[in-house]
Length: 309
Image 1: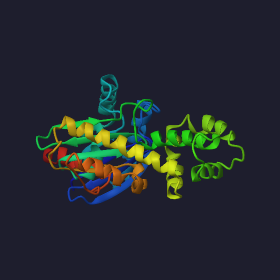
Image 2: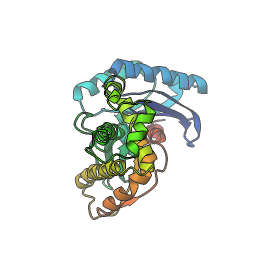
Image 3: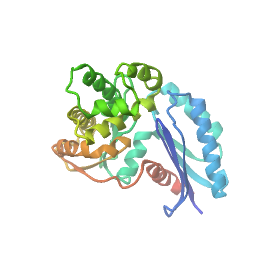
Image 4: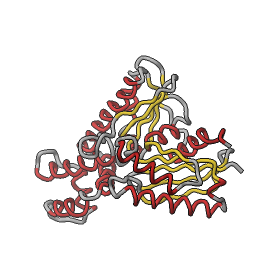
């Protein structure tokens, strides 16, 4: 039996799939996040090693019988020094399995577009886009840094949600459902209690900042105009990221498919319509994601290593 492993490492969780050459899933699970800038390279790779061992044991498969594995990691490809360290340690950890490490945006593209040409925008904890044209040239845009980039992501919106709560609380913005949603969620009676909660329980943790976006979604569904305007801003920022890939690949004016992945799109009713409208002017046609990013990693593994058998 020809077996492959796909791994999609995100900022808050990592998904694993073991499947065969017929695209039948033998086992899948989730583990800890794989952002080594949030923890360390050693910790991330050790978590991956343990979970891969667990997956193979559950399938009763020896490592040497796995034909190949693709691992999508946040931040990979952004630092030659860190990439070299990851590659060196990966060779020691997985000496019985052929593997390839890519940036997690590539597995998002592979899953959403089923390895076909086009552009995929990822908006989860962070934001980034990846695309490939008919000449097999690839490009990415966005995702430079948590501090000065990741526009339109859940983290970016989480920060803006806290900003807008403060503005609704002190009169700079008209008070709407967002104010009550946050007051009730954190069970506070005085607005200024939120400062202590934010500084000590939310801001130090990237995943918790990103989770605040869920409160924005709840507020938008209740009609908060300020919340809806933030999603409009996010749509524009994601459009710019897609446009960056389109420009690099010289796709403007040509017909191309584009799709999406990431947790932000649980709120897609507030994001996709305006994003689709803008990208269509570049020649883009929105297609629903064909499958998940982790399945994209599996498909990349199959594409990369199938002929090596």
